[in-house]
Image (cartoon, rainbow, N blue to C red; front, side):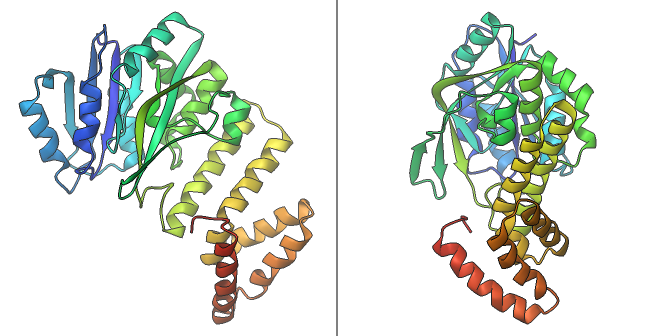
Length: 325
C-alpha cells in the first residue's frame, strides 16, 4: 500500500495542470506515493494534456487518472476523489496550484510519523495573481490552528495539507459531508480535525496558489460570492452548535458575514438578508449603520430609486476600499 495518496481534482485547468502534475512527480520521498487525478469532465484540453503526460513520463506508473463522463461539480468531485484514496496519508494539490518544494511530502510525512497526536500538517504558500506576472509570499501567521482560531479565520490552504486517512474516514462517518449543501469542502475538514487532533503549521514555502478570477472565493459575481460566504456561515454555525462554541463566536461569525456580504446583499436587493442585517445591527446597537441600511430597505420596492441610491453607495464603498469589488 502507498504511504500517501495525492488528490488532484481538476476542471478546465489546461493552462495549469502540467505544472501541477510535475510538482507532485518531482517529490523526493523514501516511501511510495500515488497521484490520483480526478478530471470533472473538463470541456478544454485538460484531458489531452494529462494523457500526454501519462504516455511520455517515466513516472507515469505513479498516476491513477479518472476522467468523469459527466460533470459532478467541484464538491462531489472532491469527495469522490478522497473516497478513492487508500493510503495512510492524504495530501492535496488542486489542478490549478503547484508544489515548488520537492521535499514537501517527505517533511510532512516524517512529522506525522513522529507525532501521532497530530492529524494534519500544512505549510506556508505563495500567491500568483492573474495574469501571473506577480507573486507574493503570504505573511499571515498560521501557527494557531485551534478550533476557536479556525472558526474566526481559516488560514489553511488546501494544496499545502497532508493528513491521516483514518481520521478522514471518521470525519466522513460523523459529518456525512455528501449530505450537506456546503459550497466549501475543505473548511469543515480542518475544523473537525482541530477538534479531534492537533494541527501543525510547517513554516516552509512549499506551494504556489493561483488566484484565478471566477473561483468561488475570487469572483466578480455577487451572487456566486454571496453563496460562498453563506456556505461559510453555515459551516461555522454547524460546528459551533455541534462541537462547542459560545455566544461571542456566534456574534462574531454573523458580523463577519454581514461585513463581507453587505455590498453584495445590497447590490442584489436581497430582501430577507437586508431584514436580518437590520436586526443584527439593532441587537448590536450599531445605530448609524442601522439608519444607513434602513434607507435601502425603505426604497426596496422602488427599483429605480433603489438603484440610484446604490450608485452613491458603490462610489463610497470603493473610496473606502472596504471590498475588492
